[in-house]
Amino acid sequence: MTIRLRPHHLLCLLTYVGKGYSPAFTANYDVIAGRLSRGEDILIVSGPDDICAPLLGEPEPHCWGESVVERDRLAARDVGDLLARPIKPGIRIDLDAQTLARMREAFSAGLTRNACQGCEWAGLCSQVAASSYPDTRV
Image (tube, rainbow, N blue to C red):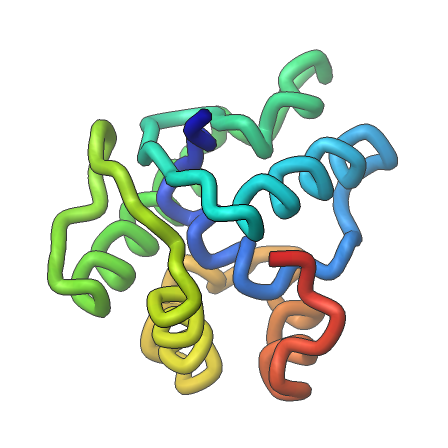
């Protein structure tokens, strides 16, 4: 199977430690993290993805917001530069151990953090990265 991810979730998965917007969100993300850890590939999509799914039933899910679309744009640019390939809808990515390590190194160095500006989770993600990614689920 393939996991559908929007571009900024390529950054979020680096520091995911089991915290989220709701118990349903976290339970869903835990399943996705397990699948990623077992080597399932990623399909880049535009708009809400497999991680967003539990939020889509809310009255005004932030998944459609302009700030989230801008996060996707910035993450796609930065991760694409890092991996030397375009990150756009339809592209598939294999998140092997080497790629994951490379992405975490760049994240820790601040090279791929433009999309994180103004994100409510940025502080937590900074703590996780500064501590060398303990307890991450991917």
